[in-house]
Length: 165
Image (cartoon, rainbow, N blue to C red; front, side):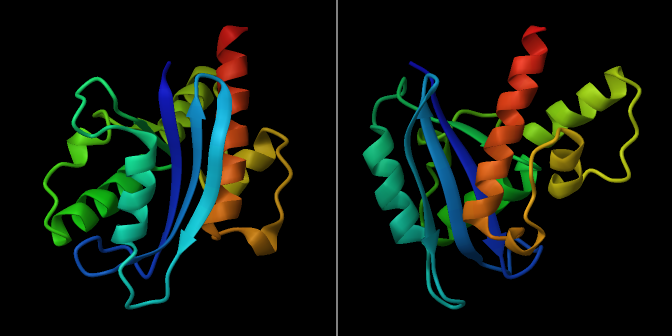
């Protein structure tokens, strides 16, 4: 069965070398079934890495090359870059033991779909795209990893369903 980990990070800034992850929102799916969802949150200055690794080690056997996660995110390069840097800062060079490369960027799927349908959204922010796809958005909950990962997952489900049509 395919293992997917939908991830949304909140950080103290945009620089993966100098800023830190403060929230790790996730939805873990095996096949089409959600097995686990949650939020790991730390205060600025605290290291989120031990909690993320603890979670990842419950989802896969990192020593089994066949047992990896697909990393899915909206604007995935941002989240992937922060995660890779987090691993390195904590002396772990084995990000690839947990995740397949490349990650699945839901933003890229959206952009391709918009281009194919000749749609030009105002911007490609998550809330704008969710509204376009009629996903209810609660503005004051945006930029919280647990909220954003849920609307990202809803968007992904819609995109996958439309692909089949």
